[in-house]
Amino acid sequence: MLLSTLFKLDKILIIISVVYSAVCVVGLVGNLLVFFLMKERQGRKKSTINFFVLNLAVTDFQFVLTLPFWAVDTALDFSWPFGDAMCKIILSVTVMNMYASVFFLTAMSITRYWSVASALKSRSRRARCSVRWVSALLWLCATAATAPTSMFSTVTSIAGEKLCLLKFPDGQHWLALYHLQKILVAFVMPMLIVSACYLLLLRFIRQRSMNNNYPKRRSKVTKTVTIVVLSFFLCWMPNHAITFWGVLVKFNMVRWDKAYYTIHTYVFPLSVCLAHVNSCLNPVLYCLMRREFRKMLKDLFWRISLPYRLSTIDGQSTGVDLPIQSFWLQRRLEPCSNVSHAALH
Image 1 (cartoon, one colour):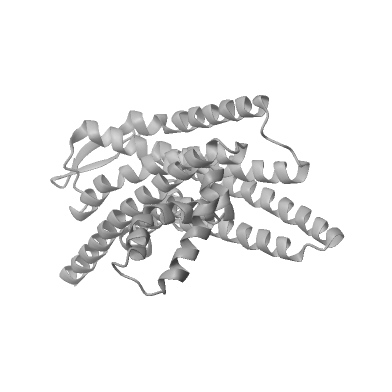
Image 2: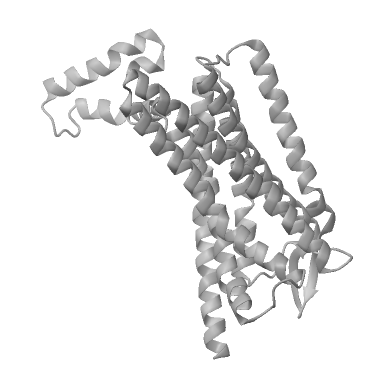
C-alpha cells in the first residue's frame, strides 16, 4: 500500500515537472511575442490598457523564468538543491510576480470598463504619466505584499531532506495569517473587482446594443469577458481553496484527517501547477485574442516566410501556377511602400 502510494506520488511529481517545463517554454515564447507586438504598435497608438498589458507580460515573463527551478525541485520530491540564497530569491520573485500579475489584471479590468463607459481617450500626455504612476504603485504594492516571503523563506531540513519553504518564528498561526492575507489580497478582492467591472461593462454594452442594434459586438464582448473571468477563476480557485482549507486546519477550526492529507499530498501540487499555467494563458487572452494584434502577428509570420515565398516564385518549389503566384505576391507587396504595417492586411 505504501509503495503504491509513493509510486502514484512520483508519477504526479514527474507530470508536474514536465508541465512546468512546457509552461516555461510556451510562456517565454508567448510573452516575448507580446513584447515584440507592443514594440511594433508603440509608435502608432499608445493607450492605458496596452501599457498594463506590457507590464502584465513583464510579470509573467519573470514568473516563468522561475519555473525551471520549481521543475527541478518537484522532480526531486521537493528537495531543494540550489541553496538558501536562491531559495529566498526564487520564492520571492515567484510570489511578487504572482501579486503583480493579479494586480495588473485587476487594473486592466477597471481601465477597460472606465474607458468604454466614459468614452475616454487615453492618449494624452497626462494620461500616459498617470498610468506610469499607477503601474509603479502596483509594483510597489506587490513588493510590499512579498515582504513576509522575503523575510521568512529559508531552506529547512525535514526528515533529512532540504526543503525551500516559509518558516515563521511563532509557529503555524502566523503562517495561517500569511496564507489568509494572500487569499484575500491575491484572489478574493481582485476576483470581486474583476467580476464587478465586467458585469458593469456587459450591462453598458447591452444598453448600447439595444439602442444601436449592435448584437454582434455585444456577443463578442460577452464571449471575451466570459473567457477572461473563467480563466482567472479556474486557474487560481483550486489552489486558494486548498490553501484556505489549510488555514482552517492551522487555526484548529477543521480537523486534520485523511481527506485533508490526501488532497494536500496529491491535489495541491496539481493546483499549484494549474495556477502557473495562467502565466502562459495571459498573453493569449489579453493580446492575441485582439484582432489588431492577430493581424500584426500574421504580418510577422509573413515577413519571416517571405524568403521561402520568393524562392517558391523562382521555381524551386511550387504548388500554384507562377502567374497566379506572382500576382498574389505583387498584391501583398504593394502596401509595403506605405510604411504602415496595418496596410499589409
